[in-house]
Length: 104
Image (cartoon, rainbow, N blue to C red; front, side, top):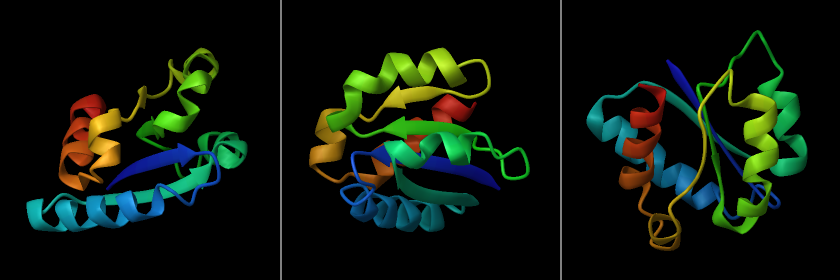
């Protein structure tokens, strides 16, 4: 099972996207734990060695924090800002496919 974490300002705006990504994963038969947190909580989850995160996707509203997260975590996992169009359209399938590409 792959763990996909989304982080945004408060963790709320990505919750609908998580639901759509979960539906897409189920339709594809892809085993994933997908969840959203606020950026202030992200480091706690990223530092949990018992439940490692496979990819970190940042909401477009926190794009300004991308360099900070990459500096700290890029050696351990892929970090990327969610495409603004996919985010705006709440295209869970497109975001999930990108996460899968990043995981490799």
